[in-house]
Length: 174
Image (tube, rainbow, N blue to C red; front, top):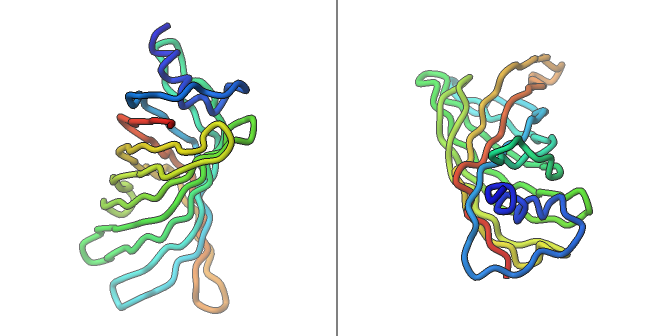
């Protein structure tokens, strides 16, 4: 029950009532099942850049079961070195609660092509009851399936699915 109460602070993304201000950050894990859509552009002989969005429902993990907490939309720019298969990426996300309150932040990551990447997500504000929200988490992107379609201009459209997770999310409202 205590884990559900702590998760509800971010799942303030589900509660319609305003969350009380906190002196200490609360820590939890969350994930989103996302669809990724974007374009792949060749940047060098052995380098491509993927630019796109990841969107899907967010769930906060509790001792009982995950709680649906809203939706996420992330912009992403990811460079892939095709020789080493290393990737580096960065972007921004907006987290939208079921009642319309939002929080946003930026992220960066490093990893390997087809395996995904791991980095830091930093929450930097919000609206409504999430106004003044701050926090930080380890963010992990794990793609599970992808479809590629080459366009006439040489770019490639990518549609992928996967899991976006936030580990040890330290969340605080003012």
